Each structure stands twice: as C-alpha cells, then as structure tokens.
Image (cartoon, rainbow, N blue to C red; front, side, top):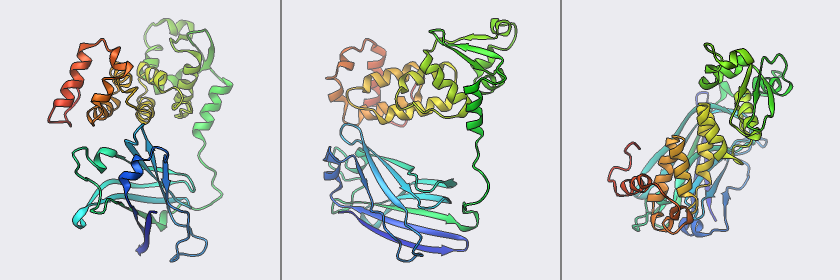
Length: 340
C-alpha cells in the first residue's frame, strides 16, 4: 500500500499544499501488466474545513511494458494555482522535474502534470535512478493556490467563443466558400476563418487563384478527416485525435496546423509500442513531426532495439537511410543532439 503525507501552510494570500506520495516496491508495480492505473484515496484534509477536500493524485501506466508513467492531479475546487513535482532521491536529495506556472484549473477534472519513463526509475544497468534505498518511489507535489485570484462561483457565464465558431461551421451561416472532400462531400465555410488559421488555406484566396473565382476548395482529405480538421480550425478542438491520429497528423502537416500536429504527436506517443515503433518513426519522418521522432528514437534506444528488429515493421523497412539514422542514434554519445 502507498502512503500519503499531506500538509498545508499559508503564506500571505497563498495556500501551499504539499503532498509526499510514497509507493513501495515500485519496480514490482511496473512489472504488473494488469495494473494500468494507480491513484490515491479520496479523503478529507483534517486541517481544513469539513467541506474542503484534498487534492487527489494518480499514475497511468502506458506502453506494452509500462514504459511510460503519466502523472495527474485533481482539485476538488476551481482554483488558480502553481504546481511543482519533485522526485525524492537517496541521501535526502531532491530533483524538481516539473514547474507549471499559475493557471486556472477546473474542479473535479484530472489535470496532466508530468511524464516519467521506466528507464529513469530503474535503469537497465541495475542502477536505481529515482528509487530510494528500499526500492520505493517517493514524489513530492506542491500546489500553491492564490486565494486572491481563486476562481469562485459567480453569475459570469463561461467563455463560449469556440462553441460559437463551431456552430458557425455546423449551420454554414454567412458562408462564402465551399470546401470539398476527396469523395465530393461539401462543407460551407468562411474565407476569413480559414485564412486566419492556415497559411496554406490563406494562399488559396490570394492573387489570381482558381479558388478566388470559383469559391470552391478541392481538398485531398477524406470526408471524416476533413470534417475533423474543420472542427479544429473553427473551435481549436480535435475530438477524434485519439481515434485517427495518423490521418490527422498528415492533414495537420498538409495545412500547416501546428497545434493539431502537436496533439497528434502526443496521441501517437501514448500508443507507442515495440510492434508499431518503426511505423511510427516512418510516419514522424514523413510529416516532419520532430518531437514524435525524438521520442520514438529514445524509445527504440531504451533497450527496445533488439525486440524491434523481430517485428513485421522492421522486416518491411526499405529505407537504408532510416536504418542508418536509428543506428547512429543508438550509438551516439550525445543523445540530446538535434535530429537532422
């Protein structure tokens, strides 16, 4: 069973919540392929009012061998806070690995804080990197809540700009251009919105292009992908990014939608396994997804190379340049170098 040490103190207008979470025999927990999530119990803070609950914490284990550990927290109230995550090391040493400056968070909604990697917790050379002498993992959270900027319940409605723009897409009101999918499905859209979000789409309306006269844009994307791209352009949301990240990555690269591209890279990184590592690396290389490329190369280097050479993806590799790049990255001393 894990243990929690929860303390609070006040400095001026700021309440500092400090949580030390100790998980014993953490390597054994990682080797348990059944457990995919581990969280603290929901409980009351004995030093606070009866109506005030504590922050909750959880870990999610991702990857076939639990190679990635994502850490989340949940606040019982909407607050404006700064968060810090610190790893407690041997000999009373500490290492702060994440600092997130003040921002507003919603109540009772899990908030992503950090990602740890299995290789950093217990290295393959037998060195316990982040573990204490007894094999436990101890991490310290600090949540600094500013009371003077705390988000309170009020009569001010929530911002709905993205919803309003999405409705503009859905009803086609005042549209001045038509966008067609590869199958011919038509969407009534607006030049000003498209041009403000994508340099590629903006170019369709500049100079003496065909689109200027026909007010029609022919897209190479399938209808379901184009619909998702337009939803992102209008609302900055991508509801299906976890379902079709490969297709959306290609679309985001094509229309130069950098934030959507980053969301796709994150989704593909979360589903990274030994079996799909080569395909993911090829996809990242094709669409200049440098963050995903770096993370995939790190995954391959981190003790996975031998296993990956037995997969179907490796057997189908035809690019000598790709094989050379993997080899050079694995053998390089400077793993932090830029990917060319």
